[in-house]
Length: 135
Image 1 (tube, rainbow, N blue to C red):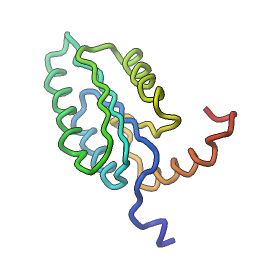
Image 2: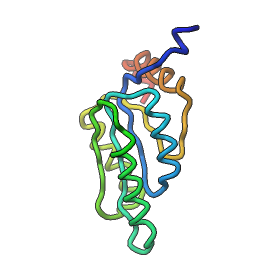
Image 3: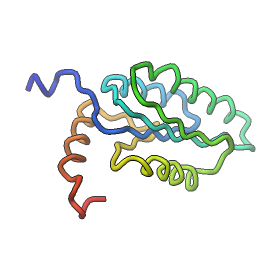
């Protein structure tokens, strides 16, 4: 049991889907810091033209990415300068991620998993990596 509770480093790449919620992103990044994944992808849509507050909020979220991810990792920023909308930005971001990655843990900015979630995902991604029933 002590091994399970000891510090854990996430083995799989983590994909973060962020937009304009700096408070939620900050909490997620603090959790991510506890498992220090070695590879992180950040998918971020650009600000909406009809929402003046988006420009500031999107910039705040992107600044948090730079400030809070302060451990040694491969950080891949998949940022759109203009708003494509979620139904376009997220799949196009996934296309970039999965052009090089076989598997990854995907989190939206408002999903705050427990630390044990990352171990759970790593173990199951490994266990089912060759199982054609799992996508």
